[in-house]
Image (cartoon, rainbow, N blue to C red):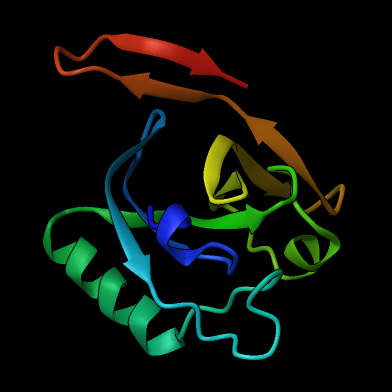
Length: 136
């Protein structure tokens, strides 16, 4: 993720991987934030870039399983704007960045019935396939 390089603007991108018994991110694809009016607290992903990444992922036997973005100088919790524009089935990884430094990241899924986000655990794998840490 390019959260440090983008600060104080929001960065964004796609989480590409598998979504069978559990979600597993195998590739992170940075995408240009096309929002030009409120880059400090909004992101937009160009639909053509999304479609291009989706086709490339499918050629590899993968799929887009989520979207990441940063929250410059704000917590890693979904904003009202994030909630209004969320799609079901995707993970939303939000990185809290303060003064250019990453404070942490949390992942969320949108519950269509409740019209709100539910936090999901993040499991970080180390090189031998074991877990380094678990976050929630």
